Amino acid sequence: MESQKNYKSFWNDKASTVQGALIAVDGSTNEEVARLTGAHSGRQVAIALDLQPGDRVLELGCGVGRIGREIAPRIAHWEGCDISANMLAVARERLAAFPNVGLTELHRASLQPLPDASFDKAYCIAVFIHMDKEDMYLYLEDMARVLKPGGLVFFDTWNISSKVGWQRYALEIEQYRNADHAARKDVARNQFSSPEEVRLYLDHAGFDVLFLAAESPWVQAVAVRRGEGVDVEALRARAQAAAADIAYSPTWTGLFSGVLDVASGRRAPADLWQARFAEPGGDEETIMFRAWFREMWNHNASAWGPAPT
Ligand SMILES: C[S@@+](CC[C@H](N)C(=O)[O-])C[C@H]1O[C@@H](n2cnc3c(N)ncnc32)[C@H](O)[C@@H]1O
Image 1 (cartoon, rainbow, N blue to C red):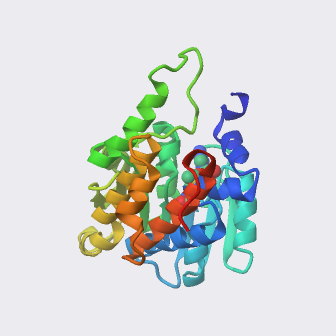
Image 2: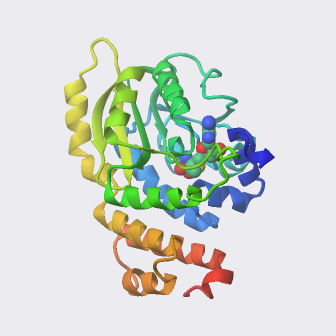
């Protein structure tokens, strides 16, 4: 398709309406669900980066500001960058109440509009999964440039080495089994990495790895920009002590695996609902997933039938 030839047109198309933008960032079909999932991701980011009130923080691929909306109130400055002007327009509306927010449109795999050593922390969630590895690497190099020495970075990518990561990859493979090889693949299709690969990219881009979570379908990396006098061991000890609050839990992974079974047609949505969500309440992740899955069901009601109330 002509419109899918580059990242910018792909994501601008997805974000041509507010609901389209919300769905494209994490499958949230409305503001209420985006707030719930944003709070969950925001907590992971805050802990991984040890956010402090004086911090200047960069988000690469900020989308609608799903996460920025949750962390902007607790830091000095939040800068959201994105390739899509339409995504940024939604973020501008959603974050209008916060005076400490900046938004920057990007045009290639570069943070060129931003000065060297101008941020304390940076993060990038559910973005590298949608780009070529060369572009992920170029962005990592530039994140090292805009971070101060000793600055922390947190990001994720699909984990091909985990059981549920492979389950997600299998969904992707099926789309291409009988594909027309005369046509180029969608530029923003899902991409997968191993933890070892992520370690290599970080090392070459100028970071020391502090913590890599790799048990869930995500590789999640916390790293520090190298610099003189940076106490890597102390930073590593802090990040590793916070591991359980940064990594996706076994509960999250199990719920996600159930959703993949539904998405691949191997399990009826009602069966997953009955097994995991019919009983009210539960832990924070179950409550979040229940709301997310119910709204996804509402969105697919023409195929799945009416969603539970
Ligand atoms: C799945 S969304 C995630 C948004 C946000 N990080 C979140 O978790 O809510 C991916 C975002 O990355 C942006 N993006 C995709 N490719 C990009 C690129 N090459 N450079 C910068 N941003 C990109 C998209 O426009 C979109 O807003």
